[in-house]
Length: 390
Image 1 (tube, rainbow, N blue to C red):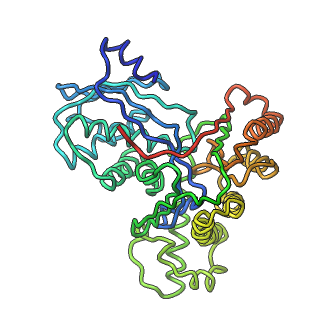
Image 2 (image 1 turned 135 degrees about the horizontal axis):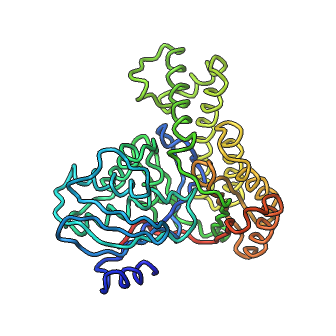
């Protein structure tokens, strides 16, 4: 890995540890994890690597292969408010770990991301791999759920993104060739094995050429709109409700939604329509995957993508163009925006025998519309993977 080579160049020795956290895709369950929804997820075999060694003086010193600015701070002297650079993810992670465990040592290292940023939850992967490294160096053992919730808290409390736990769960709990089926309400999950009768597939990722930060998008606004829909529906139905911040659409029975949906403001109603239809798709998708029905599974992914555009109203014009191209490309079983849909990329499950044809077709059609993005657009085909590991 390049990060190992860079570490050797900078410090004149080999790194003591090499850790990897995969990126993730979520074919179904988009935008509903923060409402305690149900998701389908897969980790992919591309992600974030960190090569690092212990520093006895408590200093965190991390160089990124992808960003020019080096991160440097002491574990006992972390800025209380985010600074506004990529290292905020590290500061937030260190603060969360420091609050729950005693930290004695810092680390020096080099971090490397394999693919362009946007849509694969690179932010969660950075936090998880760094948390794992800092815990390892300090002799701390984090169980999977402690790691998941600590990483989520770092992004919520410090970086300022009101994400759910979809990203962290996919990047920690996933196993190669198994579909993660997770209920975000009670954290129960199942790893559904590939059905021997299922057609083979690979995962294609089409990068729009536009990077994005959730902290500067409408991501947080969409969550507030979902909460407003839930709060309003509970009020219309005479249900008990508490603080607005705690309102979740999962707390609203679907019958209540059907009865009172027309009383909601249009935007709130659209967000609720997406939630209730997406949770149904996630359930039906898990059964289709279990039964080896890749055509049905792909159809549901395309439906999810359409609902994200029409009801959740995310996706810039470039991503919508990519989505439309995918729906018209033979050999793609199903595809949608990957992640929040505010710039970034699209993912698709594809026929491996038509991999080159698919990449050529999508790339040619997309760049015909946006030739100015030629040097930033990319297509990558990958496979499923285990979660974070040393």
